[in-house]
Image 1: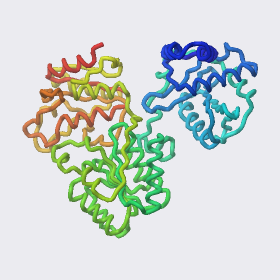
Image 2: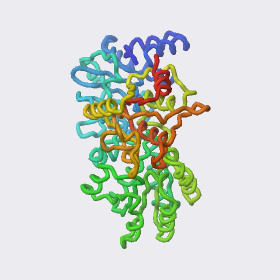
Image 3: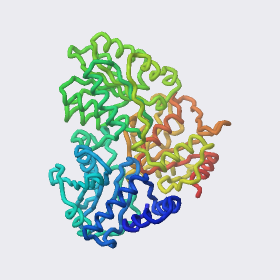
Image 4: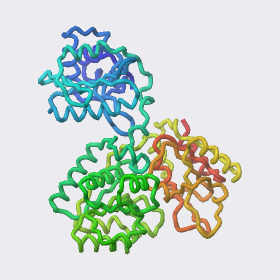
Length: 494
């Protein structure tokens, strides 16, 4: 996206025909609705009439969205002395204005420069800002003019480079302290589901809630946010994680007294005399059939609430798929929420994963600047390279191996993280291996052969789990598999 002089924007809107105006905005990477252009024109007209000069309206980004979280700013400009954000509203309420300005300030403060946020309501000509305590205050047009004129603006060549996703994408398991302190925001989709679920439980209208979402849709954050709400309401919330507990789980348990258990402890927890008010089953697609039956019997006998949070595709074995836990949950008296808006997905990474798992879908329009590729034929050289990546801050995630048999990939795997240990977590930089067992079927879909003596976990399912943990960068290391090297090169070639 390029910055634009708002006077130029206003002149173009006033004098160009619609097709030429759209083409002009495309040059700057601006996509706005007709009413929004009307509002910008009205805003610029007012600013000029109040003594601002056209050269003081340069370097503005119009309708910029932070990558991966789709947080949009109407008019955004960077300066040496402060960042200026101006939100234009045709009409709005003070409550909605305050909410947006508070959120915008939160995201912009992470850049380390003072932030000034304003809202201008076109219909009423009202001007609003936040005081130092985050309270909404009415201001005059003259004060807004002074804020624009007083900024020492600076040009930005690559606005996306300023915003690091790890600063904003808070994970309850990887950033538990940020999560507990409330240093995050839910999207509109998440917030609507959250409020509806709280209301449903308050009304006792539906006992079971199902939350389904693919990687990157914020399923885990929404699930834990709901848990946090009811913990704050002094409910006894029993949260079962269908996998190994992460470090973040133990922080929530030990420092904040959350009632979290691995699913394997289900029977002993349900036998405790203290009744759970709410049971939450996270990564429920991996629960065993007898465990599901025990949970259903418990909530029916005690008339309590339950939330199942799952992604049917995030399974590791054919037996997990055959259990069809999602289908069985949806046979209960329940209400289901499906999250579809991706908030943790880097478009580059998402495209690469899609292309890798289905070679019929190669997208030649994507430039893969954050996907790295290496090839090795020597297990020893590969192991040393993975150790080097680990030393440089990469999360090297292994395939879950056998507890009984020595497998070929044991020769080069480093560290302790495997596909099972990272369920529900996310990392900025992820590295993994595509070994000699991977191949494409006649239908173009990625598959993997099971090595003799290996557990029933499917390598291709584990690879999907591993890659979808990445937020910013991926390193693929191909080992003794020339066809897969060719396939990766075809995806990455410019």
